[in-house]
Amino acid sequence: MQLLFFPFLGAFGIIPSDTASTKKTPLSILCTSRDLYNEISSHLFSNSVQNVILNPVYNEQVWMVIQFKFRAREIEWALRNRADSERHFQNFPHSKTTMVVHINRPDPTDPGQLVLLWQKINALADHLIPITRPNIKLATNGPWRSPNPPASWGPDRDLFYQMGGLQESIPFGPKYCPDYDVVMLPFLRLGLWVEDPTNVPAMSDEEFDILRRCLFSLFDQKGIEHRLEPLLSMTKDTAVREIESALIETDLFLETRMDELAGITARFLRLERYKNWFEDGRSWESVYEAQLEKQLSAYPQVITDIDLLLDRLSTRYVVLILLHHAICSPRSNLYGGLGRFDDSTIYTTWDSEMWPERFPSGIPQLSDVQTCLLRFWRPGKDLFGKFLAYSRWLGRRGPRKLDGQLYTV
Image (cartoon, rainbow, N blue to C red; front, side, top):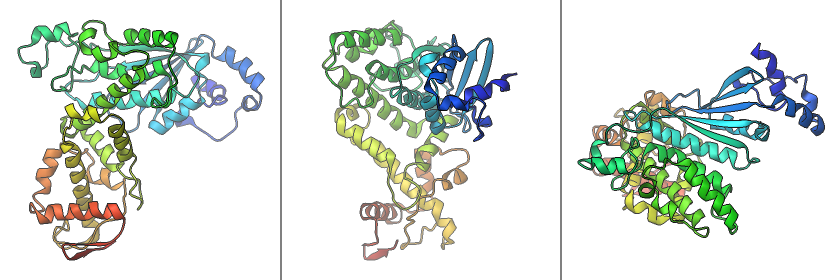
């Protein structure tokens, strides 16, 4: 019975991915008549609910789930990746329905789930900001409070409960960074409702009042004065900068901690980060690096509590380059298996599909990867000479001599 409604949904660009087709539907005329579209859609979507389900469990085939309920009927389909979800949110008539975003609690024994939720929620905010403001409700599913403070809190049990007693999957040193605050923070961007937070017109008193109400409605109230003091102290002149700073700080915190997180989700997230570090081909352009540079340029102060000397970032990049060499070497049939005796070849083409072939179960913690790499390259020239050759070649995109040897493209 549900399949009978797919032609109607298709007229609005709402087709489950498994049933997508280029065939015209009986309501294709709606695509050419705005009056017909408005009249029929107002009846079709009357009292309807669009449930957006964000699951923290890693699934390569499911990025988010859409569940559409109208007139006692229900249709559900999966969006496989971020590109699918972007197309959905561009086409769906959100202003004609109620959206309920369901956020399932991450498992603290698999801390990478919190990072995955952060990525999905930020993507959702990116999709929602350019469209007409929909009616959005949030539902957090699961017990987000922790019966006991994490071991990192030591004897400060009472302080933990004074600050909210919320589950904290990834400790943030001197700060308290509960999972609930992490997943709610990106929705503050919808309080600002601007695509570019660095270019925002002056905020009126009314707009700032709405933003403050949004802040208090999003976050758990117990201990909020301790957890979110900078945001509670913002003014209409500082609000944009405070919110953007909090977002960047959280993003960098999760990004750096992901290097050493245990669990299957973190393994696959490390794989996703590494395989997509550069664009496929020979351009060596990196969206990841461009975003990081933009963050550090805009708010350099946030790095002080996270990666003061950029040691984590440097280690991550060294491991990336050496792993790329290790993956490519066997394909060249070089003497020595992993090409550790080869001093002349730099692999200049980026192929993202090589990474999941080599790491079908994800990439281990980077400290373990470093240990593994040292089994194949001696510390010193063999290991870091190859890295220097890569990094210097990337700077010029061409051949060069290093220590008297020619590294060819």
